[in-house]
Amino acid sequence: MRFSGPKRRAAALGSAGVLVTATLVAGAISAPAASATADTRHGQDREARGVAIAAARAAKTGIDWQDCPADWGLEKPIQCGWVSVPLDYAKPYGKQIELAVDRVGNTGTKAERQGALLYNPGGPGGSGLRFPRRVTTKAPVWANVAKAYDFVGFDPRGVGKSAPISCVDPQEFVKAPKADPVPDSEADKLAQRKLAREYAEGCHERSGAMLPHMTTPNTARDLDVIRAALGEKKLNFLGVSYGTYLGAVYGTLFPGHVRRMIVDSVVNPSREKIWYEANLDQDVAFESRWKDWQDWVARNDAVFHLGTTRDAVQAKWLELRATAKKNPIGGVVGPAELISFFQSAPYYDSSWVPVATVFSKYVAGDTQALVDAAAPDLTDTAGNASAENGNAVYTAVECADAKWPTSWQKWDRDNTRLHQDHPFMTWSNAWMNLPCATWPVKQRTPLDVRTGKGLPPVLIVQAERDAATPYGGAVELHQRFKGSRLITEKDAGSHGVTGLVNPCINTRVDSYLLSGELDGADVTCAPHATPKP
Image (cartoon, rainbow, N blue to C red; front, side, top):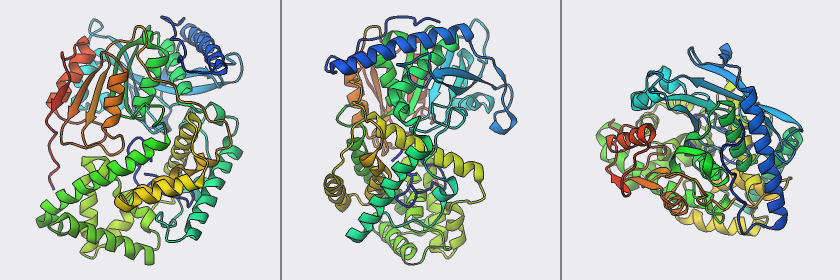
């Protein structure tokens, strides 16, 4: 399941399951992990030299900022440009790829400016190019920070405008209805296994030259080259969801290059969790947050008429699911499409009202509202290509970052057990990740995320009941990054906290980015306002 929010009308992985929906180096590059093998250390040494060469080249070249292409949807005064990075950092003079970047200047005075703030929204596979629009659209939460910082976004390697990869034809990717993710028989499982294997083969056929280099450490190296191209000696970074793991890896590889870093909704960086176990942890957390949403729906039964208890709402959900399995709604919305749509409620509080409203309309007899919300739009060529690309990058990065189980018996045993008590997302998540079991290129050993020499205090922000990145991940990173501070939004579960209105959090984010100030101890904040129908 993606470590970022689901895209509306998210597509399935073929038919296999639902898409749950980067001057001279300014400071020493940290030494490789002590537990690494000699070969790994040698590889890291070569890549460390490579990124130093690429960063020096980028610092000299800079970025040729221009008005953004009209079809990028980025209005003036946002500017766009390109940064060249090596495909393989062990070969810095070899093949180069171009990364798309954009920026909007700080809104305050020249004296107020503190540099560039770079952003990654998660995924893997998310585009950060819309980040400067937080300034041009005058998002109030970011008004104070915008006075001091240029807001800089980028498409990571493989994403969007940055040497995009692909695994299947986008129209095939979005076709509906898909097979029910919950298997009824061994034959169903065999069919899904076949589709997952074919998806992995498709990635290799369409994007094979990129796949060995689609790793989080390489994206972190790209981030350092972008830092240099911007003329920044040190990095200011905001990472959300998967962006927190990118930040953690960057902070481990380049601790002396960090100025300020905020990580929001944290992926557990433990080597044992990346990525197989992290996805199993998601299944448990999604079930809990699904129940939170059902409780809220029940409390608002006067509006939605879906039942006055969680069990009553669940019963209507199971009825809807059974109906869609027997006869896909509108011919296109089956159980897979339902999960793609309904999963946004456990992800984000902002989806609670829209999802409940569509569900309520369906129960009242309006099936078209559900079709409009949950069915793929086959006419949206650009959107479908973006969805397919996002899923391809997600798969490529997670499969390459770590060694995945190759035994189907282990996958079957783990997911069958989890599904018993956590049925909402378990099997759809399993099918989405199963291509990693037969991935056709080398899988790496995850970096040992640790505090390195020169790493300043990092600010960690986390909702206690986050489904996509369970709370334990924030605690783990807090322990690994010495001197960090953890802000916990208690009794809340929205994924991505820093963009929400909660003064307890907003004022601390501002203080940290504007003055470097942190509380003397960790902080617990009350939750942001509960949605009202």
